[in-house]
Length: 281
Image 1 (cartoon, rainbow, N blue to C red):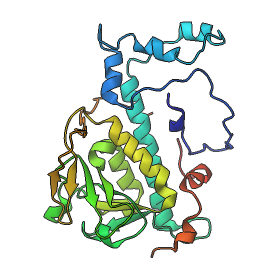
Image 2 (cartoon, rainbow, N blue to C red):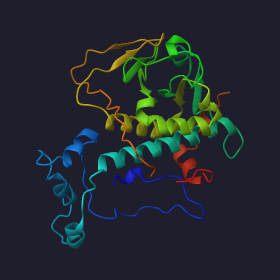
Image 3 (cartoon, rainbow, N blue to C red):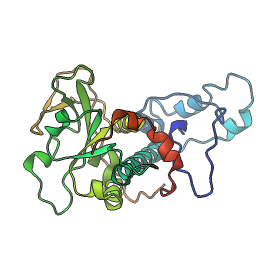
């Protein structure tokens, strides 16, 4: 289980505890759902990899021999990680939206999540992290340019920008899945009525990286990355290294596991998440 996917949302009565050491042997694997699916493929190329992965950093010390002999790889590990990552992104986006709607401890709203009425507004705003495409709300007739993103993974060029000349455009319908998207819109008025949003500010950097990590986890092996223009059209980029087709398959029966000055954004969003008491794991 990736340690950085632990929930930042404290349960009632809990206190944040610093992590002093890893709870057991650790190892690294490719952040890819398709790759993890190969672990449980009968007689597959990587069918023996789980045991090797579990023992990768035991270093022959013998400290964890008994535990490792009894350890079993989850057959649904790829789905479990997908669900967990989606849940963490959901928690982060919901809290960021609440901060934009109701403000922090000082009562001043932080525009961590900004609703956009057109693609062109992306270029007009500052402190950009990434673009989140939710698609038109149910029962709302959207502008044709807001109806879809032609490429599941896309970037957008920012005119006149020396830094951050391109930012990621995430199709959250595929990234989050229908269940969490519906829950986000149900629990946040800000996210309920729009199709396009901009994640903004230094405080949302970790959340933006987690969205990117989830996007990469569900990506396929081959495809091009689309370039979205200010009319919402996307054309494939000619990049031989792109691997960007989303796996949109869902698992049936799956159950739960006014802009402030930059100086006002110094409070980090991950700290806000740890103090949030209105969100439950």
